[in-house]
Length: 423
Image (spheres, helix red, strand yellow):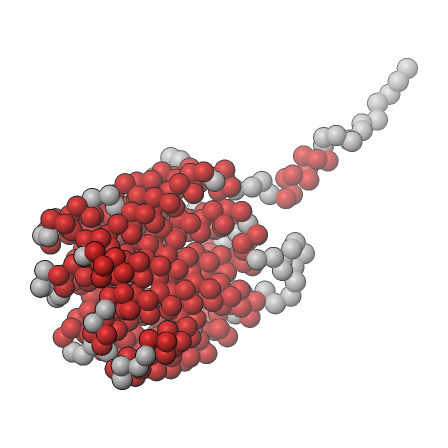
């Protein structure tokens, strides 16, 4: 038996380190943006609901525009999209900081949040597209998906903790300032690694190249799963912030979220070394159901009012996120052709952002109206709906037979006549 491909073999892929290091730096802002907005706007307005609304506007804008950016990257190349996007994003964040500190009206913050979210560089999907291009459908693809999930979760460990520390220890706007600076520096460094980028697909291909990645039924089924994952991220960020504020320990917010994201990271590492006996399209419905189940105790733990209990439950939730996310990204590489892969990845990361935005708004409103513990019901509702959707539509997740094989069967089936000798 051949040994299972592992991380060491993956990291020996030619050219991998040239985009991994700048890619890790460039994706840090994605994890810092939402929590940076929540902390800054809550500081200047005193309302978690208002802070959640502004962060939600950012997330909705990103969710709507990210797939279009991915489509442009597939067509014109990653560098052509990444460089102007990084510069525009930094400018929009700077304006948002200025308006928040000036206590500008809510409508102006919401208006500025739109270009802030629309211009977020989609570095994670671009890195995944580079892996798919470099590995060319080989056996290391599931390992690459697990590695990227671990990288994402390490980002969500470092990013929120860094943003929280800067906002609470330096200045309320320091988190967003660092986010804008990292976007420009990391984005430009990543864009410079053009040698490892997948080629642009400008010319129409022979098989329906103009179609969107959403034309693949499996991608449409994956979107609710990633909306549910986003509901976990957004609900946890706002609810943990409200919880630590309510018990008079605001500095514990970064630690609690770090424990949650750390569990996600550990599960991601494990997923990359496990020899799976079942196919991804069979694992995903089960992983979604387990994630929903793990979110049930959150409200009870927050109601108890102790950070230790809530941290333990958050760890369990984090351990359940990675299997669902990794399996979903692995399915994209099986269901979507290379010419639309970056777009498909951005639909999923956009779904995470949209779920995060909706959850942040809802959790903020619940925390303002019913107390900090109420916000923890949002991850449960989001993941329960996602599990229901994916288990109902699971048949669409199975990879379809190749077009060529179908035509071969048809050629040998009905209508095929064989000449025989007759006496």
